[in-house]
Amino acid sequence: MMNGKQKLYFLLDAIEDARIIAPSRQPLKIHATYDLNNRYTGIELDQLFAKLVKDEKIIKLIKVGNRVKEIGSRYGLNEPDDGYWYIKLLPKFGSYFIKIQEEPEYQEFTGKVSPTKKTKVVNY
Image (cartoon, rainbow, N blue to C red; front, side):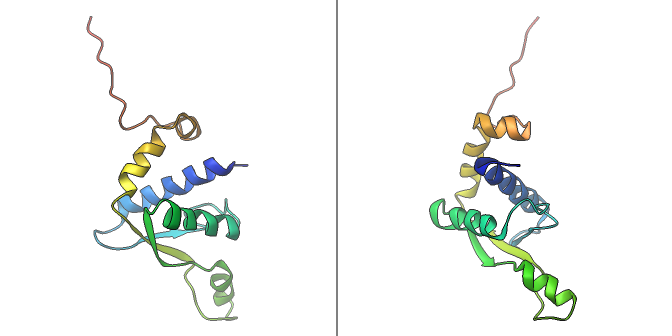
């Protein structure tokens, strides 16, 4: 089970993955099941996206995914929804994500090294 910071880290990594493969000037698509492996409750995901929109001001939500409508639409129970969160990255995203990647907890959780750490060259 992930703690709060780990949930933030996992979401940020998913957003970064989506950014890498998304066409230029197109919204990023994040799906709670496919991209986030169902690791969040609906409330947790709502709160994390709200934090990134309102507190950190690093993304803009274009469309909110609705898992209930997505599941219901498969069975013809309600209006269709693809279940994706459509987001736009704001200019501050890059610097915010770099700052997060420098946190030791992030590096321990992901096994990744900070992009700002310089590789030491050993001369023999």
